[in-house]
Image (cartoon, rainbow, N blue to C red; front, side, top):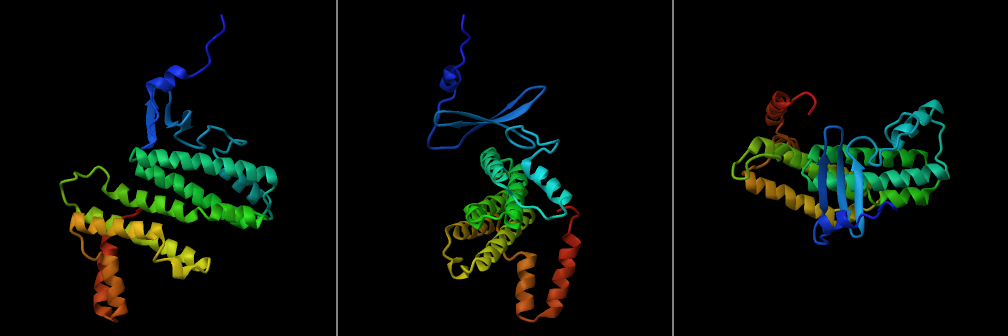
Length: 254
């Protein structure tokens, strides 16, 4: 008797909802995988390394493999057509997994995967000979930065009681947003689009998110923001005190 190979029953048990991101985690004693329900099927992703589980001569991602090749070539390395195709696959896979982590509120893992994508984008800029191909990916850098900034901020307050104020963690979250906005601004300057920065949708979303955190957790200006104001006003005595306070708050590895 021919073995049934379709996945009709699995799809029936997990209906697709076009109004939300359909994600779940499956765990066993041996393995943990992410699944994303899409319109006509299911994507299954590994939680570590490359989402499809492929390895490249021992490297856990294609990016890692390319970095090794680049070092071996003493940085005289250029991407060929086959490499570009594999990079495209890796970009898409990490995008899907990043969306899964965000939906599951695994924000630190979303930051990890966003950093991988940003690092791979940097590598492409440095080693691609096809400018148009590079630009085809660079156009998504603001969106990846947006995801990373949002996830990094939420990682500070994730798990906190929604009804309790935690200004210390909220302040750290606000600083993550400020850092993300700074990186976005640098990107707009790099591409001679600084005049479009304030009107950019992602910038406006992050700004609204930051101000929402201030209101929810009753946070005024953060120490870093107070320091910037003090320096602008040439109040160097206050600036020195604020720097000391920031130094005392600094935690190794944060």
